[in-house]
Length: 328
Ligand code: TXA
Ligand code: MG
Image 1 (tube, rainbow, N blue to C red):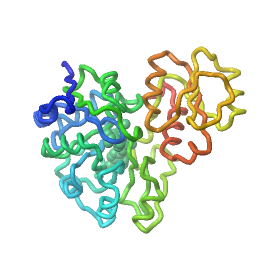
Image 2 (cartoon, helix red, strand yellow; image 1 turned 135 degrees about the horizontal axis):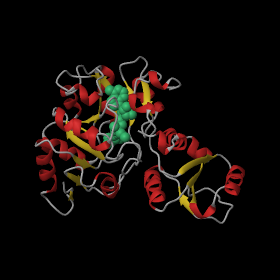
Image 3 (cartoon, rainbow, N blue to C red; image 1 turned 30 degrees about the vertical axis):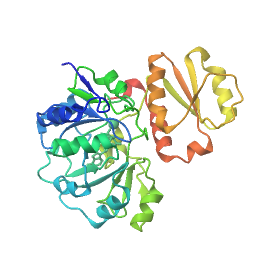
Image 4 (cartoon, helix red, strand yellow; image 1 turned 60 degrees about the vertical axis):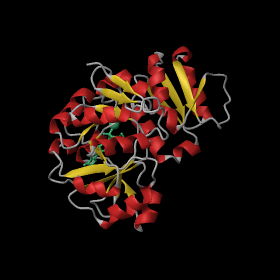
């Protein structure tokens, strides 16, 4: 299959074409404000099965359903509790995914067999227009092969999926660069299953009740099946350091010709070394670039400012814990 690269900035037919492909059961990758998603029509179980196949995604790892208006949630969720409307009012469109009861019309395969469904309304104009033109919600996991860093530009999608999907809609680089916050609204109080740009404090303020982070000691018992899989990992080994002393210590044993250091731009840097910027927006692009360059180790300097960013630390810890042979 030849994968089309569609650009709405230069081609007025790009989005109508993409919507037509989706309606005929094809898979189309599209930009959101977080990362690129791999879309398929949510009510088309055969298209959804192909999403799992082309990604190499384990069948029990559920997908996120994307909607273009808060009311459209009624098509995929069995009930919309008051907490849903509160959060939708404050954070939709935006990088927040909510877990609710699944509507019986949504094929179970979308949710990896669970009776729940995760949904969000993205903030990207291309994503919203594509959902509207298609006329139904789109199930869309991140558009990477399972275990690879999520794509934050069209070229990353092609790196993983060229020839395996019908089209990629090019919307340039993603604004946020890390996946949405996932919050389970079926538990009381609500629990964050995956940290993202919307923080626990922001959610708690709007809901008027505490919001906690899922402490996944027992990974097999996690309510968010995706969390038990190794994620966000480059081929290179990722080493986290928390001080300049620790960095100097690590660099004594790492082969400098095949290592890079990621650190926040504002950080004072005492060593003469190739230094790459550490920012949420560009983390996955840095991981992919390191792999293309054959880098063996990526040393990440986690300053106090980085440590306060729950989403960034979550992805860094997962990348540091992962080994390629352990990935699905
Ligand atoms: O920012 C994002 O959320 C991006 C863009 C494309 O929207 N999507 C994304 O999808 O990151 P994916 O499939 O890579 O991650 C979905 C996460 C997984 O951790 C999965 O386990 C969790 O959401 N999830 C999905 N449905 C769930 C459910 N019913 N219950 C609990 N967790 C669920
Ligand atoms: Mg993903």
